[in-house]
Image (cartoon, rainbow, N blue to C red; front, side, top):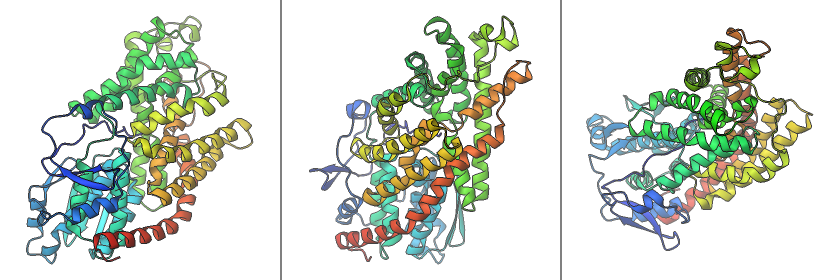
Length: 533
């Protein structure tokens, strides 16, 4: 799973929108020069301003005549609007440079806020077609390549999930894909407003949400008990702290290595001296502490993209998932050597040395340390709340997400516990139901379906068995007896395909329905903003 957004709320010298008067009006304000108390401690309880009202507010601006030449594309790219204008000067797109700037910035925003590469490409191709531009896109997990008007652009992508902003960016893009005479300048100003506005949660609530997410995962994702929860609560601050340090000092390339290393160092200390759980509970604890780094999205999106013909991107995500699992296994094992030497004497019948100094990989015989009805009927409520908040989903948008996730999880665990179907079949059925519910919510209020699916993937934690397989392989290589190693690659691929199978079928059913909704929405915007629908 990619990290949730912990970015500091963006500050800008340009004007941005804020909702006032119950969200029906939009006023423009200058961003203050320093972080306010609200950005550190606040929670945004306001209702989302519909994208058509945001566009209407920018359509009425007298000063919207020009876009500053220094306006950046952003998201880690230094290219500005002036650079794009110079690139296309003297070409057939001399007067269309702002359209190119818009599609570049919109594409970057899609990936930075959590859209899948397949859906981002489909929507952006429709936008370009509607704008009268012939374009070719190639999205990967790190680079965007766009060819338009005889010029090629290669830009860096910062992949993350920011639900609050993805909802508005998606709504804007779909309107641009449906309205035949959209005003590009107005759309750029609206997009800038979305990008520049603060996140719905300040720094402290965001940190607390992540801490609680890791903590509840010990019970809700890995079926542990309150001892496991207590141990995870003491280890999770080290996971969150390492993430923050990496973001502060731009160490994102080694964040996974450092987090798994730190978790491997800390777990033996908590286990030995504070919460002495049984050794078979250790996989629950390291799984919960590394929850957001487990390769859930890579597995599912990889299978999804390969199914839709994006072989390079899909295969690269599968390989990324495999390598992430191996990195986590190595990091945990190296960290474990600091305080975990000979920690597994009980499991090795008194043998010391390497065999007693490896990270436990297999859980207890009973997979449910807490009654199933309590996990899925009670404890999943706080788990899901903190999951939604860690994705930067507004409080007022959460009820819709609950309606998608909770029934799907209940169906999943009912199929698993009944034992009437294989687990991979349960994965496909639960994902099919969840995708249908998520698509219905998307039809109703515009929330992208993939946002509602992410919390399910977090709780089901795809990838954890593969990390356990890496650890088990190390034990077998070092002569530990009685260890069963799951087939690493086939298990990893089957997890991704089983989830993607149900998702693909449901999305194909809903795509034409959602397209019809977009057409109706475009007509509404046309009447408000003076666009041609």
